[in-house]
Image 1 (cartoon, one colour):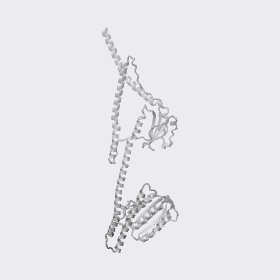
Image 2 (cartoon, rainbow, N blue to C red; image 1 turned 60 degrees about the horizontal axis):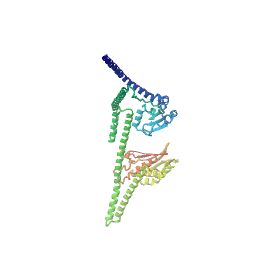
Image 3 (cartoon, rainbow, N blue to C red; image 1 turned 135 degrees about the vertical axis):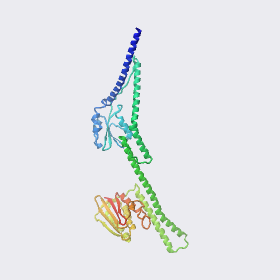
Image 4 (cartoon, one colour; image 1 turned 90 degrees about the horizontal axis):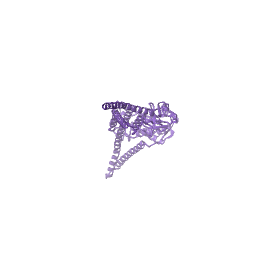
Length: 473
Protein backbone atom coordinates (compact mmCIF):
# COMPACT_ATOMS: atom_id res chain seq x y z
CA UNK A 1 0.00 0.00 0.00
CA UNK A 2 2.78 2.39 0.97
CA UNK A 3 4.74 1.25 -2.10
CA UNK A 4 1.81 2.11 -4.35
CA UNK A 5 1.41 5.45 -2.58
CA UNK A 6 5.11 6.18 -3.15
CA UNK A 7 4.80 5.30 -6.84
CA UNK A 8 1.73 7.52 -7.08
CA UNK A 9 3.56 10.42 -5.39
CA UNK A 10 6.55 9.96 -7.72
CA UNK A 11 4.22 9.88 -10.71
CA UNK A 12 2.43 13.02 -9.58
CA UNK A 13 5.79 14.68 -8.91
CA UNK A 14 7.03 13.78 -12.39
CA UNK A 15 3.82 15.09 -13.93
CA UNK A 16 4.11 18.33 -11.97
CA UNK A 17 7.76 18.62 -13.00
CA UNK A 18 6.84 18.08 -16.63
CA UNK A 19 4.04 20.62 -16.29
CA UNK A 20 6.41 23.14 -14.77
CA UNK A 21 9.02 22.43 -17.46
CA UNK A 22 6.36 22.93 -20.11
CA UNK A 23 5.23 26.16 -18.45
CA UNK A 24 8.75 27.66 -18.19
CA UNK A 25 9.22 28.14 -21.97
CA UNK A 26 5.65 29.35 -22.21
CA UNK A 27 6.31 31.84 -19.44
CA UNK A 28 9.58 33.01 -21.06
CA UNK A 29 7.84 33.42 -24.40
CA UNK A 30 5.01 35.27 -22.65
CA UNK A 31 7.57 37.49 -20.92
CA UNK A 32 9.11 38.54 -24.21
CA UNK A 33 5.70 38.91 -25.83
CA UNK A 34 4.63 41.24 -23.00
CA UNK A 35 7.94 43.07 -23.30
CA UNK A 36 7.50 43.53 -27.03
CA UNK A 37 3.87 44.57 -26.67
CA UNK A 38 4.78 46.98 -23.90
CA UNK A 39 7.55 48.43 -26.04
CA UNK A 40 5.16 48.80 -28.96
CA UNK A 41 2.52 50.43 -26.75
CA UNK A 42 5.01 52.78 -25.09
CA UNK A 43 6.58 53.82 -28.39
CA UNK A 44 3.38 54.04 -30.38
CA UNK A 45 -0.19 54.17 -29.17
CA UNK A 46 0.45 55.93 -25.82
CA UNK A 47 3.15 58.23 -27.22
CA UNK A 48 1.05 60.34 -29.50
CA UNK A 49 0.55 58.17 -32.56
CA UNK A 50 -2.43 60.38 -33.45
CA UNK A 51 -0.11 63.39 -33.63
CA UNK A 52 3.07 62.01 -35.20
CA UNK A 53 1.70 60.75 -38.58
CA UNK A 54 -0.08 64.06 -39.12
CA UNK A 55 3.15 66.09 -38.87
CA UNK A 56 6.07 63.96 -40.09
CA UNK A 57 9.37 65.29 -41.34
CA UNK A 58 8.81 63.83 -44.82
CA UNK A 59 5.53 65.78 -45.15
CA UNK A 60 6.94 69.06 -43.80
CA UNK A 61 10.25 69.02 -45.74
CA UNK A 62 10.79 71.84 -48.25
CA UNK A 63 13.83 72.94 -50.30
CA UNK A 64 13.68 76.38 -48.69
CA UNK A 65 13.89 76.14 -44.90
CA UNK A 66 11.90 79.37 -44.51
CA UNK A 67 8.95 77.74 -46.31
CA UNK A 68 8.63 74.89 -43.78
CA UNK A 69 5.33 75.26 -41.89
CA UNK A 70 5.95 74.32 -38.24
CA UNK A 71 2.80 75.83 -36.76
CA UNK A 72 1.00 72.47 -36.53
CA UNK A 73 3.96 70.89 -34.72
CA UNK A 74 4.42 73.73 -32.25
CA UNK A 75 0.67 73.86 -31.55
CA UNK A 76 0.81 70.12 -30.78
CA UNK A 77 3.62 70.69 -28.25
CA UNK A 78 6.32 69.41 -30.64
CA UNK A 79 9.58 70.81 -31.94
CA UNK A 80 11.37 71.15 -35.31
CA UNK A 81 15.12 71.40 -36.02
CA UNK A 82 17.42 71.36 -39.06
CA UNK A 83 20.81 69.61 -39.09
CA UNK A 84 23.24 70.66 -41.83
CA UNK A 85 25.97 68.35 -43.18
CA UNK A 86 28.69 70.33 -41.37
CA UNK A 87 26.96 69.56 -38.03
CA UNK A 88 25.35 72.99 -37.44
CA UNK A 89 22.00 72.73 -35.61
CA UNK A 90 19.22 75.24 -36.35
CA UNK A 91 16.15 75.06 -34.09
CA UNK A 92 13.10 76.24 -36.07
CA UNK A 93 10.64 76.41 -33.17
CA UNK A 94 8.70 74.57 -30.47
CA UNK A 95 10.46 72.27 -28.00
CA UNK A 96 14.26 72.45 -28.22
CA UNK A 97 15.29 69.04 -29.59
CA UNK A 98 19.09 69.41 -29.27
CA UNK A 99 21.16 70.84 -26.43
CA UNK A 100 24.13 71.76 -28.67
CA UNK A 101 24.37 74.21 -31.57
CA UNK A 102 26.75 71.87 -33.42
CA UNK A 103 27.01 68.08 -33.36
CA UNK A 104 29.66 65.72 -34.68
CA UNK A 105 29.04 62.92 -37.16
CA UNK A 106 29.36 60.32 -34.38
CA UNK A 107 26.80 62.19 -32.26
CA UNK A 108 24.41 62.42 -35.19
CA UNK A 109 24.81 58.70 -35.90
CA UNK A 110 24.17 57.94 -32.22
CA UNK A 111 21.04 60.12 -32.30
CA UNK A 112 19.68 58.26 -35.33
CA UNK A 113 20.19 54.90 -33.60
CA UNK A 114 18.47 56.10 -30.40
CA UNK A 115 15.30 57.58 -31.88
CA UNK A 116 13.60 54.18 -32.13
CA UNK A 117 14.21 53.37 -28.45
CA UNK A 118 11.00 52.81 -26.44
CA UNK A 119 12.59 54.55 -23.45
CA UNK A 120 13.12 57.82 -25.29
CA UNK A 121 11.53 61.05 -24.10
CA UNK A 122 10.58 62.07 -27.66
CA UNK A 123 9.03 60.45 -30.71
CA UNK A 124 11.06 61.53 -33.75
CA UNK A 125 10.73 61.51 -37.52
CA UNK A 126 13.73 62.39 -39.69
CA UNK A 127 14.11 62.99 -43.44
CA UNK A 128 16.95 64.23 -45.67
CA UNK A 129 16.86 66.94 -48.35
CA UNK A 130 19.20 65.76 -51.15
CA UNK A 131 19.12 69.08 -52.98
CA UNK A 132 19.92 71.45 -50.11
CA UNK A 133 21.94 68.89 -48.05
CA UNK A 134 20.21 69.02 -44.66
CA UNK A 135 18.15 66.79 -42.34
CA UNK A 136 14.75 67.85 -40.98
CA UNK A 137 13.95 66.50 -37.50
CA UNK A 138 10.41 66.62 -36.02
CA UNK A 139 9.91 65.52 -32.40
CA UNK A 140 7.00 65.19 -29.96
CA UNK A 141 7.50 64.67 -26.20
CA UNK A 142 6.30 61.32 -24.80
CA UNK A 143 3.62 61.70 -22.16
CA UNK A 144 3.52 58.04 -20.92
CA UNK A 145 6.09 55.21 -21.00
CA UNK A 146 5.11 51.64 -20.12
CA UNK A 147 7.71 49.54 -18.24
CA UNK A 148 7.48 45.85 -17.32
CA UNK A 149 8.26 44.81 -13.70
CA UNK A 150 8.27 41.52 -11.74
CA UNK A 151 7.06 41.20 -8.09
CA UNK A 152 7.31 38.19 -5.74
CA UNK A 153 5.49 37.16 -2.51
CA UNK A 154 7.45 35.14 0.06
CA UNK A 155 4.19 33.99 1.73
CA UNK A 156 3.27 31.89 -1.32
CA UNK A 157 3.91 28.12 -1.13
CA UNK A 158 5.38 28.31 -4.62
CA UNK A 159 7.79 31.13 -3.66
CA UNK A 160 10.98 29.05 -4.01
CA UNK A 161 9.94 27.67 -7.35
CA UNK A 162 8.91 31.10 -8.56
CA UNK A 163 12.20 32.55 -7.31
CA UNK A 164 14.15 29.86 -9.16
CA UNK A 165 12.07 30.54 -12.24
CA UNK A 166 12.75 34.27 -11.93
CA UNK A 167 16.49 33.73 -11.53
CA UNK A 168 16.44 31.37 -14.50
CA UNK A 169 14.66 34.00 -16.53
CA UNK A 170 17.21 36.64 -15.55
CA UNK A 171 20.12 34.34 -16.38
CA UNK A 172 18.45 33.41 -19.65
CA UNK A 173 17.95 37.07 -20.42
CA UNK A 174 21.61 37.81 -19.66
CA UNK A 175 22.59 34.89 -21.87
CA UNK A 176 20.43 36.21 -24.68
CA UNK A 177 21.90 39.68 -24.21
CA UNK A 178 25.41 38.22 -24.25
CA UNK A 179 24.67 36.22 -27.40
CA UNK A 180 23.08 39.27 -28.97
CA UNK A 181 26.09 41.39 -28.06
CA UNK A 182 28.45 38.76 -29.48
CA UNK A 183 26.45 38.52 -32.70
CA UNK A 184 26.29 42.32 -32.89
CA UNK A 185 30.03 42.55 -32.33
CA UNK A 186 30.65 40.06 -35.12
CA UNK A 187 28.32 41.99 -37.38
CA UNK A 188 29.86 45.33 -36.37
CA UNK A 189 33.30 44.04 -37.28
CA UNK A 190 32.09 43.89 -40.87
CA UNK A 191 29.60 46.75 -41.02
CA UNK A 192 31.21 49.25 -38.64
CA UNK A 193 34.70 48.42 -37.43
CA UNK A 194 36.10 47.47 -40.85
CA UNK A 195 34.96 50.73 -42.55
CA UNK A 196 36.15 52.66 -39.51
CA UNK A 197 39.58 51.08 -39.81
CA UNK A 198 39.72 52.12 -43.46
CA UNK A 199 38.86 55.68 -42.51
CA UNK A 200 41.43 55.69 -39.70
CA UNK A 201 44.03 54.41 -42.14
CA UNK A 202 43.18 57.26 -44.50
CA UNK A 203 43.55 59.82 -41.70
CA UNK A 204 46.91 58.33 -40.64
CA UNK A 205 48.16 58.59 -44.22
CA UNK A 206 47.13 62.25 -44.30
CA UNK A 207 49.02 62.91 -41.05
CA UNK A 208 52.11 61.39 -42.68
CA UNK A 209 51.73 63.78 -45.60
CA UNK A 210 50.39 61.17 -48.04
CA UNK A 211 47.51 62.86 -49.84
CA UNK A 212 46.88 60.28 -52.59
CA UNK A 213 44.27 58.07 -50.86
CA UNK A 214 42.74 56.06 -53.69
CA UNK A 215 39.06 55.14 -53.87
CA UNK A 216 38.63 52.77 -50.85
CA UNK A 217 35.58 50.90 -52.13
CA UNK A 218 33.11 49.17 -49.81
CA UNK A 219 32.05 52.25 -47.84
CA UNK A 220 28.45 53.43 -47.80
CA UNK A 221 25.99 55.49 -45.82
CA UNK A 222 27.54 57.86 -43.29
CA UNK A 223 30.94 56.24 -43.91
CA UNK A 224 30.71 57.23 -47.57
CA UNK A 225 29.99 60.83 -46.60
CA UNK A 226 32.88 60.79 -44.15
CA UNK A 227 35.16 59.25 -46.81
CA UNK A 228 34.21 61.99 -49.26
CA UNK A 229 34.93 64.64 -46.62
CA UNK A 230 38.32 63.06 -45.91
CA UNK A 231 39.12 63.01 -49.65
CA UNK A 232 38.09 66.66 -49.88
CA UNK A 233 40.28 67.49 -46.87
CA UNK A 234 43.16 65.57 -48.44
CA UNK A 235 42.81 67.50 -51.71
CA UNK A 236 42.74 70.82 -49.86
CA UNK A 237 45.79 69.91 -47.77
CA UNK A 238 47.60 68.77 -50.91
CA UNK A 239 46.81 72.07 -52.61
CA UNK A 240 47.90 73.99 -49.51
CA UNK A 241 51.15 72.02 -49.49
CA UNK A 242 51.78 72.92 -53.13
CA UNK A 243 50.99 76.59 -52.48
CA UNK A 244 53.14 76.57 -49.34
CA UNK A 245 56.09 75.06 -51.22
CA UNK A 246 55.56 77.54 -54.05
CA UNK A 247 55.45 80.46 -51.59
CA UNK A 248 58.59 79.17 -49.87
CA UNK A 249 60.43 78.87 -53.19
CA UNK A 250 59.25 82.33 -54.22
CA UNK A 251 60.44 83.69 -50.88
CA UNK A 252 63.87 82.14 -51.36
CA UNK A 253 64.04 83.39 -54.95
CA UNK A 254 62.99 86.89 -53.85
CA UNK A 255 65.72 87.00 -51.21
CA UNK A 256 68.26 85.84 -53.79
CA UNK A 257 67.08 88.50 -56.28
CA UNK A 258 67.19 91.25 -53.66
CA UNK A 259 70.67 90.16 -52.61
CA UNK A 260 71.81 90.08 -56.24
CA UNK A 261 70.34 93.46 -57.18
CA UNK A 262 71.68 95.16 -54.05
CA UNK A 263 75.09 93.50 -54.10
CA UNK A 264 76.21 95.08 -57.40
CA UNK A 265 75.47 98.75 -56.58
CA UNK A 266 76.69 98.40 -53.01
CA UNK A 267 79.90 96.71 -54.19
CA UNK A 268 80.47 99.53 -56.68
CA UNK A 269 79.81 102.16 -54.03
CA UNK A 270 82.19 100.48 -51.57
CA UNK A 271 84.89 99.93 -54.20
CA UNK A 272 84.93 103.45 -55.58
CA UNK A 273 84.55 105.00 -52.13
CA UNK A 274 87.51 102.98 -50.87
CA UNK A 275 89.57 104.07 -53.90
CA UNK A 276 88.71 107.73 -53.23
CA UNK A 277 89.55 107.42 -49.55
CA UNK A 278 92.96 105.73 -50.11
CA UNK A 279 94.13 107.50 -53.28
CA UNK A 280 96.77 110.13 -52.58
CA UNK A 281 96.83 111.75 -56.00
CA UNK A 282 93.86 111.79 -58.38
CA UNK A 283 93.03 114.22 -61.15
CA UNK A 284 89.67 115.99 -61.17
CA UNK A 285 88.31 114.06 -64.12
CA UNK A 286 88.83 110.66 -62.49
CA UNK A 287 87.58 111.99 -59.17
CA UNK A 288 84.34 113.26 -60.73
CA UNK A 289 83.89 109.99 -62.64
CA UNK A 290 84.24 107.96 -59.43
CA UNK A 291 81.82 110.24 -57.60
CA UNK A 292 79.27 109.90 -60.43
CA UNK A 293 79.56 106.11 -60.27
CA UNK A 294 78.92 106.21 -56.52
CA UNK A 295 75.95 108.54 -57.05
CA UNK A 296 74.38 106.40 -59.81
CA UNK A 297 74.69 103.22 -57.79
CA UNK A 298 73.33 104.95 -54.69
CA UNK A 299 70.28 106.08 -56.69
CA UNK A 300 69.89 102.58 -58.09
CA UNK A 301 70.02 100.97 -54.62
CA UNK A 302 67.63 103.59 -53.28
CA UNK A 303 65.16 103.00 -56.14
CA UNK A 304 65.26 99.27 -55.49
CA UNK A 305 64.55 99.76 -51.78
CA UNK A 306 61.71 102.18 -52.56
CA UNK A 307 60.18 99.72 -55.04
CA UNK A 308 60.53 96.90 -52.55
CA UNK A 309 58.86 99.00 -49.84
CA UNK A 310 56.02 99.95 -52.22
CA UNK A 311 55.42 96.34 -53.28
CA UNK A 312 55.41 95.14 -49.64
CA UNK A 313 52.91 97.86 -48.73
CA UNK A 314 50.61 96.98 -51.64
CA UNK A 315 50.88 93.26 -50.84
CA UNK A 316 49.77 93.76 -47.22
CA UNK A 317 46.32 92.32 -46.48
CA UNK A 318 45.13 95.48 -44.67
CA UNK A 319 46.13 97.93 -47.41
CA UNK A 320 43.18 99.59 -49.18
CA UNK A 321 43.35 102.15 -52.01
CA UNK A 322 41.58 105.50 -51.67
CA UNK A 323 38.96 105.25 -54.42
CA UNK A 324 37.40 108.47 -55.68
CA UNK A 325 34.93 108.86 -58.57
CA UNK A 326 36.90 110.67 -61.31
CA UNK A 327 37.14 111.01 -65.09
CA UNK A 328 39.44 108.20 -66.27
CA UNK A 329 39.76 109.58 -69.83
CA UNK A 330 41.15 112.93 -68.64
CA UNK A 331 43.45 111.14 -66.20
CA UNK A 332 44.99 108.91 -68.91
CA UNK A 333 45.43 111.86 -71.27
CA UNK A 334 47.38 113.65 -68.54
CA UNK A 335 49.59 110.60 -67.91
CA UNK A 336 50.39 110.24 -71.61
CA UNK A 337 51.18 113.93 -72.09
CA UNK A 338 53.42 114.05 -69.01
CA UNK A 339 55.48 111.10 -70.31
CA UNK A 340 55.60 112.26 -73.90
CA UNK A 341 59.06 113.85 -73.56
CA UNK A 342 60.54 110.58 -72.20
CA UNK A 343 59.17 108.72 -75.22
CA UNK A 344 60.69 111.28 -77.58
CA UNK A 345 64.11 111.16 -75.85
CA UNK A 346 64.10 107.32 -76.16
CA UNK A 347 63.20 107.54 -79.86
CA UNK A 348 59.83 105.84 -79.37
CA UNK A 349 57.02 106.94 -81.69
CA UNK A 350 53.65 107.36 -79.96
CA UNK A 351 50.02 107.19 -81.02
CA UNK A 352 47.15 107.89 -78.62
CA UNK A 353 43.48 107.00 -79.17
CA UNK A 354 41.54 108.25 -76.14
CA UNK A 355 37.89 109.22 -76.54
CA UNK A 356 36.76 112.71 -75.55
CA UNK A 357 33.62 111.55 -73.74
CA UNK A 358 33.89 111.67 -69.95
CA UNK A 359 33.92 108.26 -68.22
CA UNK A 360 33.67 108.36 -64.43
CA UNK A 361 34.95 105.39 -62.44
CA UNK A 362 36.31 104.95 -58.88
CA UNK A 363 40.13 104.92 -58.72
CA UNK A 364 43.07 106.04 -56.60
CA UNK A 365 44.78 108.69 -58.72
CA UNK A 366 48.16 108.45 -56.97
CA UNK A 367 48.37 104.66 -57.21
CA UNK A 368 47.09 104.47 -60.79
CA UNK A 369 49.64 107.12 -61.80
CA UNK A 370 52.38 104.84 -60.44
CA UNK A 371 51.01 101.89 -62.43
CA UNK A 372 50.96 103.81 -65.73
CA UNK A 373 54.44 105.27 -65.17
CA UNK A 374 55.80 101.75 -64.59
CA UNK A 375 54.16 100.48 -67.78
CA UNK A 376 55.46 103.45 -69.82
CA UNK A 377 58.95 102.98 -68.36
CA UNK A 378 58.89 99.26 -69.17
CA UNK A 379 58.29 100.06 -72.87
CA UNK A 380 61.19 102.53 -72.98
CA UNK A 381 63.71 100.38 -71.06
CA UNK A 382 63.28 97.16 -73.00
CA UNK A 383 62.73 98.42 -76.56
CA UNK A 384 65.14 100.04 -79.04
CA UNK A 385 64.75 103.44 -80.71
CA UNK A 386 62.24 103.40 -83.53
CA UNK A 387 59.69 101.35 -81.59
CA UNK A 388 56.09 102.47 -82.00
CA UNK A 389 53.93 102.73 -78.87
CA UNK A 390 50.13 103.00 -78.99
CA UNK A 391 47.71 103.79 -76.17
CA UNK A 392 43.94 103.39 -76.54
CA UNK A 393 40.93 103.61 -74.22
CA UNK A 394 37.47 102.19 -75.00
CA UNK A 395 34.31 101.99 -72.91
CA UNK A 396 32.51 98.68 -72.56
CA UNK A 397 29.32 97.71 -70.73
CA UNK A 398 30.63 97.48 -67.16
CA UNK A 399 34.33 98.16 -67.70
CA UNK A 400 36.86 100.49 -69.22
CA UNK A 401 39.48 98.85 -71.45
CA UNK A 402 42.96 100.37 -71.70
CA UNK A 403 45.43 98.86 -74.18
CA UNK A 404 49.16 99.69 -74.27
CA UNK A 405 50.94 98.10 -77.23
CA UNK A 406 54.36 98.32 -78.88
CA UNK A 407 56.03 96.64 -81.85
CA UNK A 408 59.32 96.13 -80.00
CA UNK A 409 61.31 93.04 -79.07
CA UNK A 410 58.54 91.20 -77.20
CA UNK A 411 59.18 88.42 -74.68
CA UNK A 412 59.67 84.69 -74.54
CA UNK A 413 56.74 82.65 -73.22
CA UNK A 414 58.82 81.31 -70.32
CA UNK A 415 59.21 84.90 -69.10
CA UNK A 416 55.88 86.45 -70.07
CA UNK A 417 53.79 83.91 -68.12
CA UNK A 418 55.40 85.09 -64.85
CA UNK A 419 56.13 88.70 -65.83
CA UNK A 420 53.83 90.16 -63.12
CA UNK A 421 55.68 88.30 -60.35
CA UNK A 422 58.32 90.26 -58.38
CA UNK A 423 61.88 90.33 -59.77
CA UNK A 424 60.90 88.73 -63.08
CA UNK A 425 62.66 90.53 -65.93
CA UNK A 426 62.97 89.90 -69.64
CA UNK A 427 66.70 90.49 -69.20
CA UNK A 428 67.80 87.10 -67.83
CA UNK A 429 71.28 88.38 -66.99
CA UNK A 430 69.70 91.04 -64.72
CA UNK A 431 71.90 93.66 -66.35
CA UNK A 432 71.26 97.05 -64.76
CA UNK A 433 71.83 98.78 -68.08
CA UNK A 434 68.93 97.00 -69.79
CA UNK A 435 66.34 96.85 -67.05
CA UNK A 436 65.05 98.13 -63.73
CA UNK A 437 64.50 96.52 -60.34
CA UNK A 438 62.19 93.79 -61.65
CA UNK A 439 59.36 95.15 -59.47
CA UNK A 440 57.79 97.67 -61.85
CA UNK A 441 55.26 95.35 -63.53
CA UNK A 442 54.60 93.52 -60.25
CA UNK A 443 53.70 96.85 -58.63
CA UNK A 444 51.53 97.84 -61.62
CA UNK A 445 49.69 94.50 -61.46
CA UNK A 446 49.10 94.86 -57.70
CA UNK A 447 47.66 98.35 -58.18
CA UNK A 448 45.29 97.20 -60.94
CA UNK A 449 44.07 94.25 -58.83
CA UNK A 450 43.54 96.53 -55.81
CA UNK A 451 41.14 98.47 -58.04
CA UNK A 452 39.23 95.25 -58.75
CA UNK A 453 40.56 95.16 -62.31
CA UNK A 454 42.73 92.82 -64.35
CA UNK A 455 45.89 93.15 -66.44
CA UNK A 456 47.02 90.70 -69.12
CA UNK A 457 50.00 90.51 -71.46
CA UNK A 458 49.82 89.33 -75.06
CA UNK A 459 53.34 88.99 -76.41
CA UNK A 460 55.74 86.88 -78.44
CA UNK A 461 59.47 87.18 -79.00
CA UNK A 462 60.13 89.64 -81.82
CA UNK A 463 56.45 90.61 -82.16
CA UNK A 464 56.09 93.30 -79.52
CA UNK A 465 53.98 93.43 -76.36
CA UNK A 466 50.34 94.28 -75.69
CA UNK A 467 49.17 95.07 -72.13
CA UNK A 468 45.36 94.88 -71.71
CA UNK A 469 43.93 96.58 -68.60
CA UNK A 470 40.28 96.22 -67.53
CA UNK A 471 38.94 98.60 -64.87
CA UNK A 472 35.47 98.28 -63.35
CA UNK A 473 33.08 101.24 -63.56
